[in-house]
Length: 153
Image (cartoon, rainbow, N blue to C red; front, side):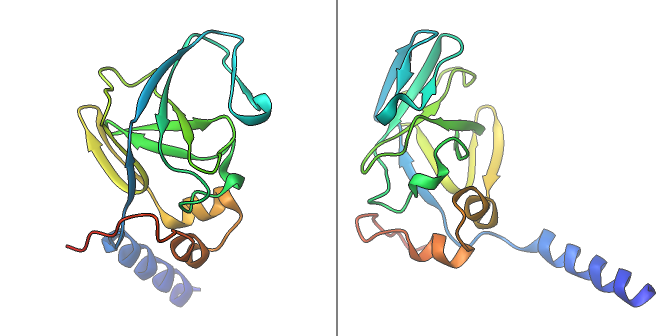
């Protein structure tokens, strides 16, 4: 019906104006070259299909990054989406940054929210993060532990 289409259009316009109210970020702590055929992480759940540059991120399930995102999740580094590889551990996650030229130690890694860099801008929404982890958006935001510093602006 026309009313249903109008309501759907109105909801899309409202969604387009919404901004993510929070960001969950960490930084690149180490960079490691992984040879094709080598595995990373607990249980060797991921094996490099090509020579790969991996960013070691000091964030894990103790911080609110659920193990369930293993093999599904991503982070934004340098404005580009980078897949998480290997199993998420208690304090470490690993991202494939092979396709991010110039990635460096200390670069911001965005787990939730928007990230901009030399290569563009990308956003990981709470709904997307929730879909990767099998949680609700509320569980995602409430699951970010007290170990993660809060900065209010």
